[in-house]
Length: 315
Image (cartoon, rainbow, N blue to C red; front, top):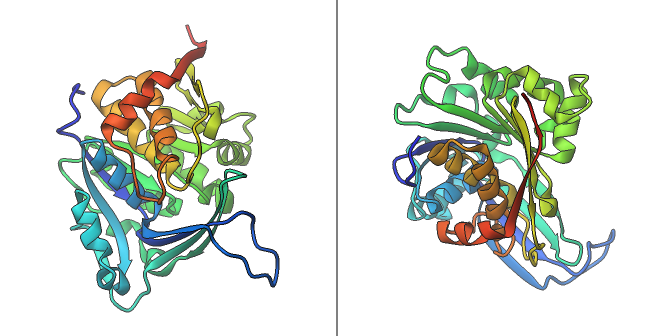
């Protein structure tokens, strides 16, 4: 692993969406009519967000996804390419609708509610994931664990790259299947609730015990509370010295994932990667829009506002 941002390649596997987000003072009641204070329309989907974030950090990013025919008409693929994302592994299905997410944001609560139309994303399978010889890392974002399990039996799997998985909502829908995919990956990334759900599915008392299933690192995201990374040797905690003024939390977890993987590749240090990841998440919430990711300089500037602490160390 080197020390420069260039020369590293990520393959992001997951969803390509059209995101429509609106800012509200309060969530609407049943049969009510409310007015939005702001709106944003653009690229979305966890893997899409990750690939854009990775490109913004100076790494090379391929997106593997299924796109509905409307994605071409709406210019979503052109937009991705303009952001530096390689799109040759995005398959367009003209007969399928583009994945769409409607995001309701209430800044006063720092929360969001999402309504998802899966569309072409539902068709993505492990057979659609190619071997990319130059890949340093494959990142799976909010995909069914069956996709990872299919690839795990391939002779090229993890031959010369790291595999990371952020299951997102799959942690609730299929916790036992997510658990079964853990021997196939190196890094598990999840928020606290997701990580605890997966741990309980395996009969474990804490997410750290998920290391017994095969990952080399288990990263638990805590939002404004920072994050913690568990390895076989230690537990490292990162926290923000000051909570950011939240504008839009959508995509913050994807920015976190991209920065963690980017700095891990560059430095080989889980501690530095965790600091960068928390910084990237904090920088993202200052921006409106799912795939409106912070630059490398913004992430680096924010790193001074993150404190690290080794909570436990083995040996």
